[in-house]
Length: 372
Image (cartoon, rainbow, N blue to C red; front, side):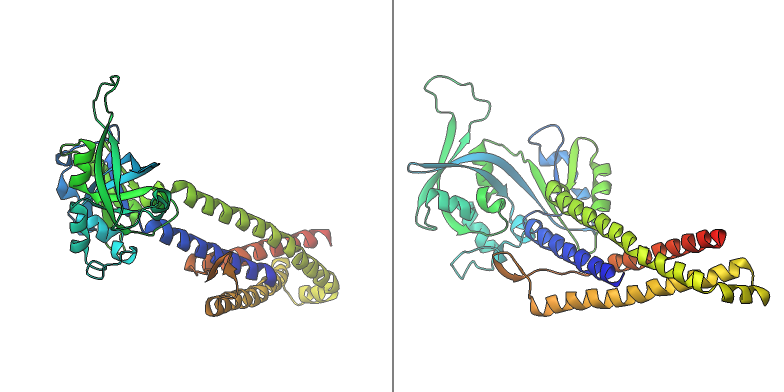
């Protein structure tokens, strides 16, 4: 029982660590809340009352456009997703700490970084730099975007083309690092043929604000014409996979605990049989059947408490050793496997062990008292 408790502590803490890594990886570039139109690709900023975005729960917000484009450098071509954004977006995704920009002037200066985007300079994902063999601040390449509302005719150019340079390479997560081009909102709108239309509004919340609660409040204000999503919903498959794995392991460990409880049942059965003379003596001095049963049930609960105590001590001991030493690493990454503690896990383990321990003890003693 102590071993099962220790396994629960270690595995739940490890899954918490994995979730924290996923959150850090995918939460860096995805703002807490994203708003888009529910039926159209683009919409006008005037369609949304900005007072809904200017309240004490919102830290910052920015308008943006997202569209698929084609990048060309001489004979090399690749698809990409261009993101035209306002300056606030760079703050929300903490761009200064995720850029590989060499110029020290712009390294931590959002205004300086965004001034680069206002010119023919873009920020590129490292995967695109490799595919096109681009040298930052040296190589010019082309961005091609499909012309809007154009009738296809033979010999007519279907793309609008502009020449740009890469001013900065960024590093977020695998998906972003393979496909994203960041440019200023005005430049991207000009390339895509948008007038004042946008496709997204990105919202960053103040610390402590519940994403789901804010999402529901904002959705109610904006109505059914707009769709409000949290960053967890944008990466729903990744988070659901992690939760499903955690749930399956938890179910397996609960079953293991049930099998481990067989030892408890056996121990209580032997004690009950061996103490038959003592039970008769207790009955003779006035104890009722229910009171005698409570004595044995309490004994079973104390056995569970002992296993719980040693299991928690062993489990958290192993976790703290991992935090301090990082003895187990994550594959090829030379970093210790992450471990994160949560109060709810602690409460769950105590409740499960004591609850199941009491249940098995009660069922065992009840059955024995009828049989003997």
